[in-house]
Length: 354
Image (cartoon, rainbow, N blue to C red; front, side, top):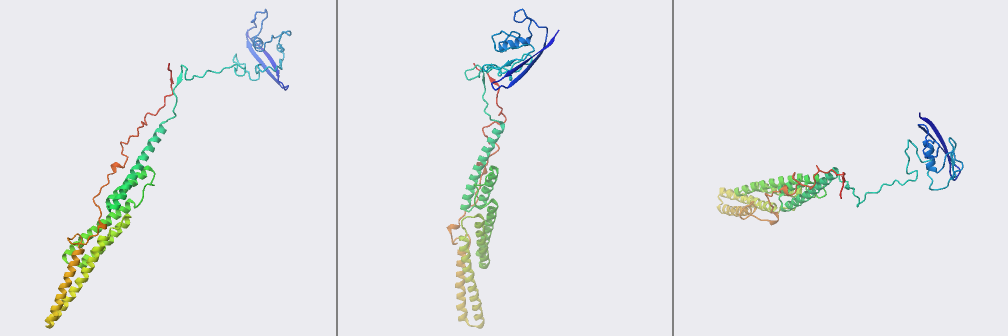
């Protein structure tokens, strides 16, 4: 039948502080475990083995003595002695570290038979972030290319193509999250410039028709409106001044109107003198009217837009019909970042290599 026994152990350190430990166990009847003819308890055997003492033997070689259930006073300064305060006695389980037992497990190094795959720390989020950064860089480069194209179109005076390129540049810059590469007129301003440019061209065509008809006053009004439209167009685009041709045509039309007015005046005077019977005076004014009309027609021909003898200002030449192809600037849906975001798991299973 099981019985219950206890041992109280008192330990003193170098400063005189005492530590008391009470050990209580339940076990079967005592038996002779060491063959000395006396029955000992399991607790006694544990204490005797740990502290090199014999319980109940006052003549032992140890300085320690333990009587059941007496107190045990240990004041040994031996650094190798086990730390009873830290030791744990629980159903045969001991704290190896507190008893001074080296329980270090050998490290499985490179030469070990067991090697573990090294984790790179690269996750699916890292892959996604890298892909997004690469796409943003592509968008930024496309924006720079489109802006450069827009600038070139503006310099050439092709504001419609410039508006197309700038619109691509703005979209790409927005996708890149960076608008630092954008400069000059916006796409809206360039569209306004292109519309004014188209208006100027329409007015110049109308001016040419009026000039061929000899209606120099109407042609002059067309020339003035066309010149203003060109100036507005250049201003909106922020480009070079292309209004020289329209200005020159407007000047010639002003002379044409001036001369035509003189011709009309002389013709009226000639008619008046003829009505009075003053044929000589009538003839003089009639000749003057012819000369003035010839001068008006001459200026009309010079001011006729696109005419054979029209004035010409090379600084007003503009390109037209340009088209910007965004396929070279935009990052399309087939963009390959070189990263498979669907396979970014890290294999952390052991790799048993020979």
